[in-house]
Length: 544
Image 1 (cartoon, rainbow, N blue to C red):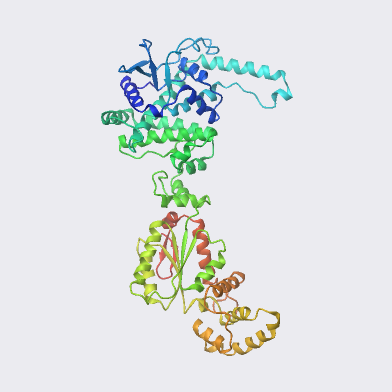
Image 2 (image 1 turned 90 degrees about the vertical axis):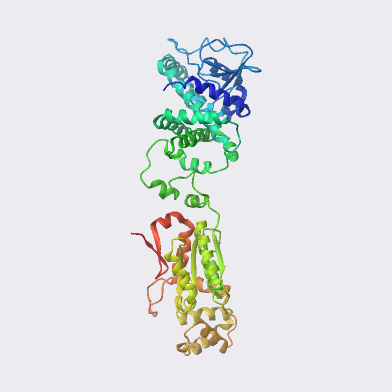
């Protein structure tokens, strides 16, 4: 890796001078590094690292001309401002007790972009002398032996050609990221960049090449993972606002800085190259299998995706607290049944259609519009409706056949009660509501015998309730409480009993509850990719 062209250093210096408010002093950079758990860096430590050129500055302000190599004069208007591209001096004995530490630079003001944290991370990683926390307790003499071996290794490392080369590389990566970050922020007016400078950088990035961009971002991605290996957490945090993300401390905060630097490079490089580049969760260690990101996130572009699509990812982590499923019930009975199955109804919204879809002009059209809005918002639509609402059923089938809706529906024939329960079961549930007290047990048995003999004439829920009223049974009525009671029974006996002509099959209301449960833990976008609604049944089927 080579240093940047002189004209780019000059341009970077101009850009940094214009946006000096985003730069840090030696003291502030040291404090930032310490807050990220990268070691203890005082103002003197930062200046010492700068003196050796292990750490380069983004802006150097001097009262007099600097004749040393590696400095590019940016401005001489009211003060002398330089860009810094110095190289580490090679020392055969290594840089231990380096004579460069305190020999120069006291009269200079140094300013750094926060992305220089990336360089300090490598200082901490490659130059720290350490031993185990129990070494002293177990074998005190071993501390000195380990320290001696560490010093020998550091002498070898810092005397090598690769020592200067690697710190040059890490500084260059920081410099490219810093420059492109400033350009990127200019789009939201957080920074100011001359249009000619912007255009020059875009041209240079195009010449710089996609391969080198990939290498730079790969270094940043690997550093992020070495700092903190919780990759899913990284993605989640990077969906936060920049302000909230900037308050994260510890090594996780340093990891976020590295990924943010990688994103800054990507954003401007994509503009220059005219193509999309891998996102930041793709540039660290390992390789993504084809289709894996789509399966996990619900999209192949996480940080460019609409928030509605990213709900799939939040759902997989169990932290999407928005509406995931909207259940449309024929009336309060259906809504009561679903609410009984999900006492903690977070993530579910119940819509009581009140059985009047056909009574008001335009109601069916409004219903169809509601289904389309659900689809646009990434919300599952689950509908429980009676077969005699033919206009609504036709609207559901038309919606299922279109590409702008994904309604799962259960059509009850002839109505909710008889589609899910036998008349004998309905009677037992009704009598359980009517005759709750122990003293009513004899009355309950008498009523059951008398009403059972007349059930043969009942062909609908309406007729069933009329029969109950004939016997002065008034407590059980259509409504939420009735729906609750039906679902409680269904949950205890999820399949039709042997006397029923559908013996052994799951009750539709249980299937509806299972569908709601799946909606709460499934990704909407992924479901659309894998399944379609069969208009004839209202149920999802796998796409071929």
